[in-house]
Length: 139
Image (cartoon, rainbow, N blue to C red; front, top):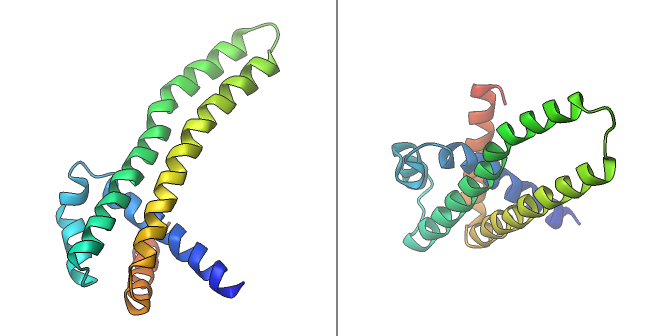
């Protein structure tokens, strides 16, 4: 159970830690990403897996970004109506959530694949880096 919990925590940390890099315009090619890979002594194979994680993380972040204006407009429309059609709203929400769920699964699988190909020392070092970044940026 402890191994499963640690694996889950490490995978989520990999996803959230790389999300910041993935959201930059340069993404995988950014100086920050290159420094991350060099600092953690990633092999060519691990770098390829990291790129897959960055790319899928960027797509996941975009799923949320692209929906913000639509959600705001939709909330405004709902507020102006005399009655709220709960079933219609739930159907639209579930449709949106399916897209997010699919991309989250792709991202989680990419994180798990990278995680499985890292040494224990690399995982610990990456987790420490992510924790330090969060502490520095207050997240």
